[in-house]
Image (cartoon, rainbow, N blue to C red; front, side, top):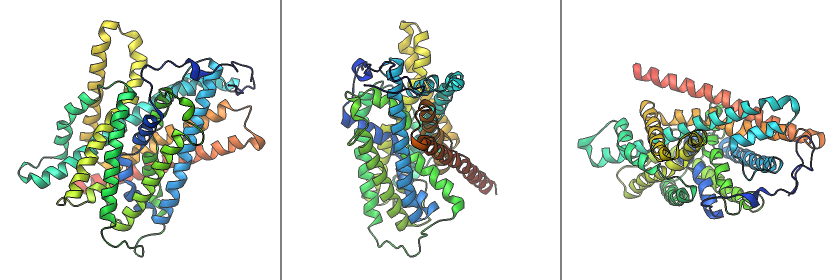
Length: 440
């Protein structure tokens, strides 16, 4: 395996194959890797698809979904490819997300090498806040789904949605004690099956009556496009799980290429999101909740099963998203803790992390707005801007004819920055509007 580094030294470690030196305690198969990638992206974001299409219009929504899917898949590709090239140069079997950022800068142009630690810190902070936000969203979605069912079938014990977050606190704490991706992959497969069942039930209700396109917008209000982009980016991105999954595979060489784990996962993600978003919008129009399951009737068994399935699917996905946070915590703390205290530290850290996420979810139970802010702010940085920067820095001496890599990554960075600024602005305005409506 050979690679040319950003400073043109192709001879560096050219015979080193990182795949041959990886020691994984519990490696995962291609199928489990695909399941983990799909599940890390699809969840509450998929079910928010129809609402996203209502912000953009059906034609702009369909085109935008495919475009964002292509960009997100490409950014994952260049991140993993850069990471592997850094492994060869640094003579290391694997690198995580932050280590890849640091290595890319260390092997980039000399004036930028002093920024290597800064790049690593930015990546770590972005990962932590992104996946803490995702866990908060999952808490809200589980609570909303269960509350709808209880309110319908047990009207004498109607409780605020915040109480349901507290009820699920202990089960989530227990589930998040699972420590290996191999076992989390089992939950991911189960969650994917449940989510696909919800998808089919939603299509059942969508096609249960005639769809009309005449009164639907082909292109929505451009002022709402940032909200659309934020939701789609949130749904498409699972980039924080990518490196742990690729580093844990039995055959990591199958992650990229054609066909590959990445291609299979992104194809499924784009197909499910675009179809549910398009047909959900054509069926329900602009009268949509943050999740399409909240629009389903509460007195019919297929809809009831869908609400149960989505709650269980998100519940089983929770520890996969939480894995990213606790993995970062472990890297910085476990080496400094005595062996006889490591077990209690693990249990305590995982429990406190879940309590924090549930607490934030209870304090801010606005599903649509939280999805948009996480998608606009954190996933724009992690999934779009950082991969574009590190490939450019690493390949600085090999940007291609007419420096096409530079211009391509500049467009991706500009797209991510636009999504970040506009998405956050629109979402903050929506939050202020909601608070004003509550006080009036």
